[in-house]
Image (tube, rainbow, N blue to C red; front, side):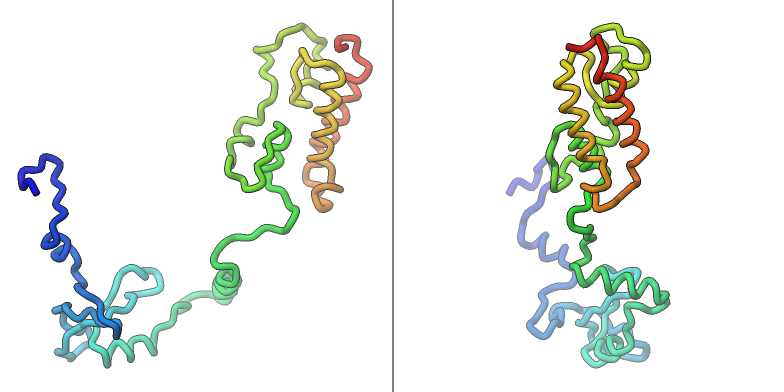
Length: 211
């Protein structure tokens, strides 16, 4: 290897061995090449066994000899200073592999927003982008002049002012399917938006401005 490498990379075995402070770990769990002194007070043995320093610092270690690491582990309590509520939450979380779960059939705000745009995103790969940009018609980009009430209705339905009445009706039905409590497990949190959608369609279904 070129010692004058301008990028400073050194992949030599000697360099890697020096970087591994703990040394080689044996079958017993001991770091057999470690030359640390046991951190137990009054002990002069080699500290070849590591244990977490505290529940808040699981990636920082204390080093002990075999006898004292056993004694340290017997006194170890992950839930030390934790409240009963925190303990219960940790137990519930561990039951599902520390992965948050959601009720089956319950759709997130983001998923519902993407569905209103006609995008099926069951695994929520697209995240919050839909709620940040729900895709409503930009009034400045309108292609025709409409009465204020009907312009507002078009915006609520997230439709385009050049659509036919059949296309607007299809959009209206798709929003109803997304917002109605019967398809959201009885969730009524979007009833206000549902009422706006119904109102908007009432303004447009008899409109003379759309074919």
